Amino acid sequence: MKFTEIDVFGVYVAPISVMMMVAWFVTVGLRWFATRSGLLRHVWHPALFVFAVYMIVLSSMVLASARWGPHVP
Image (cartoon, rainbow, N blue to C red; front, top):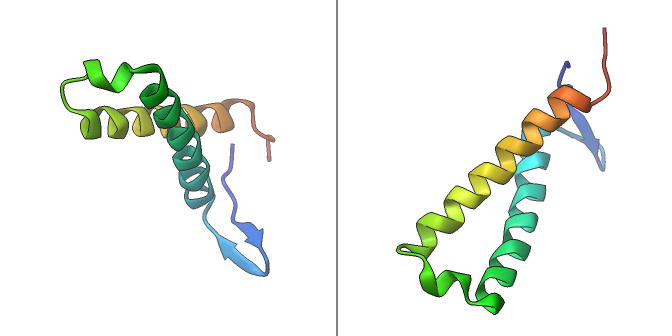
């Protein structure tokens, strides 16, 4: 897939920046769920755990958009 710029209110931004924002919101939701369920109490370093989850979510989004996104010749 060819990653092209995205028009956001007249400003062209790189697709990775949009993916980073979406991944951050997904991570905030997952962090909220982990805090409510008590998962973060069992983690050795919560900030490092949240960062690792963010990186997993972001890389999964990039790989999924490269694989199943619109194919531009």
